[in-house]
Image 1 (cartoon, rainbow, N blue to C red):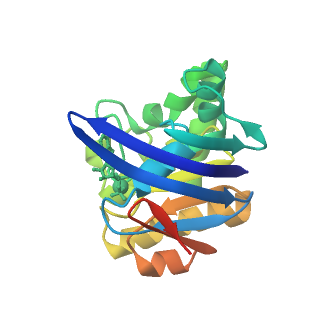
Image 2 (cartoon, rainbow, N blue to C red):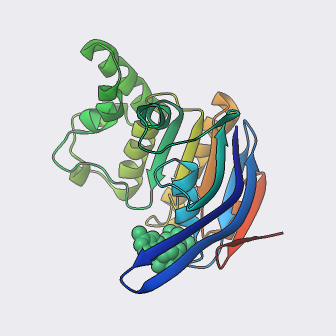
Length: 221
Ligand SMILES: Nc1ncnc2c1ncn2[C@@H]1O[C@H](COP(=O)(O)OP(=O)(O)O)[C@@H](O)[C@H]1O
Ligand SMILES: [Mg+2]
């Protein structure tokens, strides 16, 4: 599904050079659910952003379903990202002045699709995360756990093959965190969605098939 080969990432700000990732080789197979763990600042988010084509590596190669990503400002890459990859973030990243249903529909605006079909798919995604009764609420009217479920609905509305989650339970108590984890597990088992999740939570990581550990920008084996 996804192959990273000899990935390096260096950030340049003012006079400081930060090596965020060093010689990363990682393969994620179709249908896998893996977690990424490591101390704060070790490069987990950078790694996830590179996997999701949100950020380009300084060196190295990424293959998605066998195709090499050549150029990052390419229209095809934007399309690939929109159609094949869903993102979930620690702080939900919902648009506060849009209703739940409109937040979930957002990714579909980039596709050729009727308004009716968009609404149907958004309702279906909200049903999938158990929030059908909240479609007309605004994010601020929901609990943190509910907001993250809306964010999951938005991430899956376009039926992506790959779901990338950056500390999705980081802002939630353990009860809500467990609910989010159960939804991710069901998306993986029942829908076959490939999932890569960054987490600090050992118990949640143990529930995934494989734990990838990052330290100082490098994978530890
Ligand atoms: N946009 C950026 N510009 C400069 N440095 C960055 C940027 N993003 C991340 N970094 C640096 O890269 C390193 C890895 O960051 P990050 O991937 O966010 O770590 P983690 O998610 O594991 O906490 C850190 O030293 C961080 O300060
Ligand atoms: Mg991070």
